[in-house]
Image (cartoon, rainbow, N blue to C red):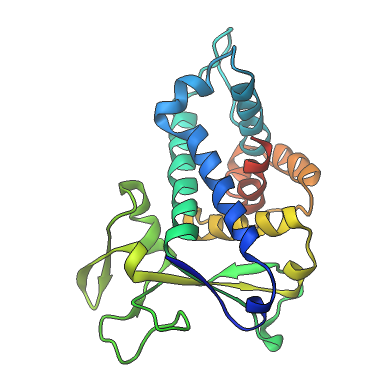
Length: 243
């Protein structure tokens, strides 16, 4: 496990944002854990009430009538998805090898904060496919998504038509490329950006709308409708801050 900072990213103090992003993802996963569901739906638990309100604000989760909140079957499935994805976010950021770098000047996108590059199995020391290693290859985030519901210890990818067992903590690496906008963002937005990018990678989210503050995010996600909000990266990125 390592976070490896390359080039300019090595000079800047970025680790705290990644550490905090891991904590935020884990906190969100903890609330969504199936064994935590009774607590989440406890009408007498004030912290659970905050979490339920955040689920409604960011993802359009509604609760059945009566004193005891009840999740619909569809929202139960979505809560399980939230648990699996936020768990995978925390694991990927904390136990996989993550290379962090700023994009080259000619590759900078003035409208973007960052991007998470596809994962590489048995990467070289730059986080790229090692041509000298026949077992080194670039996987896809879709490959990872196909595995995350089954845990984190072993993934099965296809390579040259054959199944390959991969230990993410030992064998898998990916890059997060930062843009200038990331450098100029405030601390909260930097952490949110990391979660935002991981939601693209691990939940296949899109960018139906953008928010630069948590106040904007609450308004945008609440106004999108559940279907769009659940597919919007900034809803995933800001949600853990309101738990």
